[in-house]
Amino acid sequence: MNREEVDRALARLGAERDAVEAALLALQDHPGLRLLTGAELSGRTRERWAVAEGGVALLWALFDRYAEALASARAVRSRRTRPTAAELTELGELLAGRSVTVSGGRLPHPSGQLASSARLVEQVTLGELLERMNGWYAVVIEVVSAVDAVWSALPARIDLLLAELGRVQMLAGSVGVRPGGHPLADDLDDLARQLTALRALVVADPLALWRPSRVPAQRGRAAEDAAWASPTGAVDTAGFDRMGRRLDDVRVELESLLRLRDESHERLQQVADLLQRADLTLAEARRARGEVLAKIAATEVPPVPGPPSALREAIGQAVGFQQTGQWHRLGPLLDALEDAAAKELGRARQSLTEVAQPLAVRAELRGRLEAYKAMAARLGLAEDPEVVERFEKARWLLWSAPCDLRAAAEAVSRFQQALRAPERQPQPPAPQPPAPRPEQPEQPQLPDGQPPQVQDGPRAERTDQGEDSDG
Image (tube, rainbow, N blue to C red; front, side):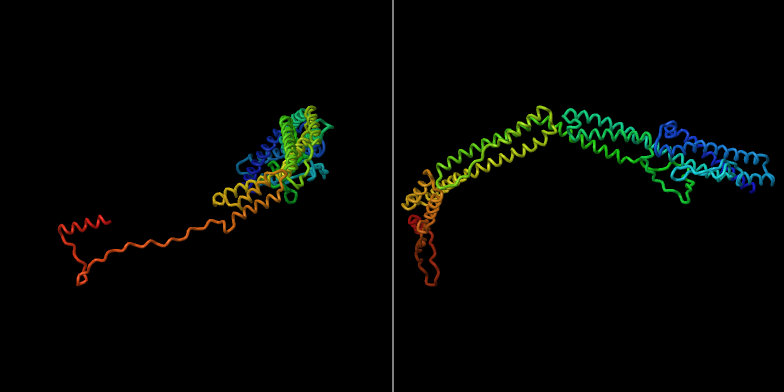
């Protein structure tokens, strides 16, 4: 190496030495490293940290050997401005040759296990020493950063979810949901066990929840520009998120039970009101059935069903659940009662409609008869004997008891036909001949065919006056 090459190599190696020192100092202050030191670990994290912890001490030892070798080269270079050939040879050996003695060893396997040492000591160049430090730093920073990421992401969130779980358990107790008596309470106990186990796993073995996203470099060597960067990855929060969603579902169901507790009295009153309306409708149907049997002849009237006694027993059971605070049992029963009460009211209304159908037909026939009577008056047929006879016949059938609806309908139809007979329709007036126009007096004609001229004077005035009087 000549003098310029030596100076450039010293400058480059000095910059690399400063970068390594800054990275090691930052690693020494890393929060993950401080948390790992003295922690009780287990599983994969304990295995990885057993290797990485030795790597931290080894990094400082290698850095010291690197700094000593660089200081030796700088001392040789500082002897004189223009080094001799022997000094250039010595500098070339120090800067590019295998002049650094380090303890033998290899980087850990990608699985995290430390490989067996090939030799006790090795002679390496400064470049190889820097590469070895890069490799050990990647091993250590991967463990430290991953552990710090997991511990920063999950424990606090798990504690918050455990606190929320305690609040939901208190809510469950307030609505009568207790372990062994309701599935929701069993779900809450299961969630509490899972969250406690997850928190213990996060504290003792955080790497079990770390998913690295880095791609191994080719030939097992880290890229030079990323050697001192923190590895990338993600914390596996799928299990935690699943527990959070499960707790949300339980809370929603419990809040619905809480709303049921606040609305149960009003909803039970609404069910009772529906059944009362159904009873009143059935009573009206029975009255209408008796009226139909008494006033309508030859009509099959369907029977009226009895009151819903089973629903009233279910209402009593619902009231018992309400008084004892068994809201999780009251909810399904109350939903079924509301549906059954609405159907019972519809059934009662349908029964009333079917029973009162003959009365509705009779009322419709009476209305038609009155309308045809008004039509007869407009047509001037109110005094016609046949029309009067058919009207009285239909009226007698409709207003007598029992009423024969078939005969009454035929009588109303005959009364309508009587109004539509051609001989009873009003005839339009016969057209009158036009009145003759008055004849105009012929005026005398002069021999040449010209009409006579009116003369001025008293005679003409008398003529005009005479025409006005005639008119």
